Image (cartoon, rainbow, N blue to C red; front, side, top):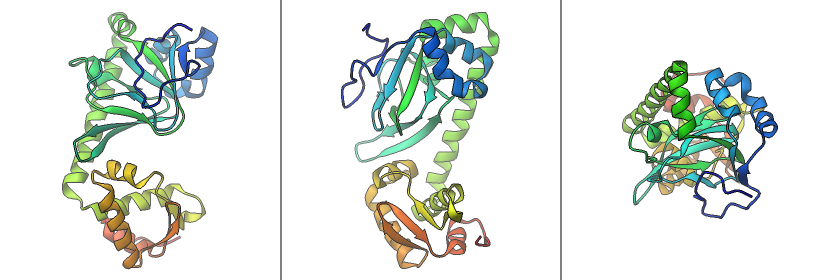
Length: 252
């Protein structure tokens, strides 16, 4: 099989069948589930692509400092981008199916500022730098689209920094549990963290030891009860809302 236009960035080597070049019908089939959520200029660009990357959960798409080969359109799955320091990692962005990664690196110094990791089994279509730049020259609408995406990404990062700077870890954790409950079934009476404690620490801008400590503190306050396997029963929803700063909410 011809080697695709990307480097092996995974802690585990890609299998030969995991990535490569697809035919036009195969790419079209991969795009079909997200077609209505992708802007026409970007969709047209993706339909002309052929290089694909399939990732398993926890596998890296690229690492901070790597040279950018183009834009990555997520056809299925989800990616989170992490900025690491010697003692911790912090999630700076998430991208779901239909989203694109790589604009910052492509239009700045050509190097990724963070490491992208698959949150679940993920399929990515590579839009090469040559393709993207040629399409921008032919279609100004694509330039506007990418600028809007960059602006949205910047606003999202500022929001994350604001929460880290101004909210305690316990408050951020309470907000996370309430958001998980709101998106869950059975009224969110029992929620899952949705990830490991290490990943949650990266999401909330702290370290695992503090997450463990604050979960225990929430339990001692009678707000949650651990159920095992990363699941917690919400005993006092109103108390969680007050702690999160959302005001008193009626339990369902």
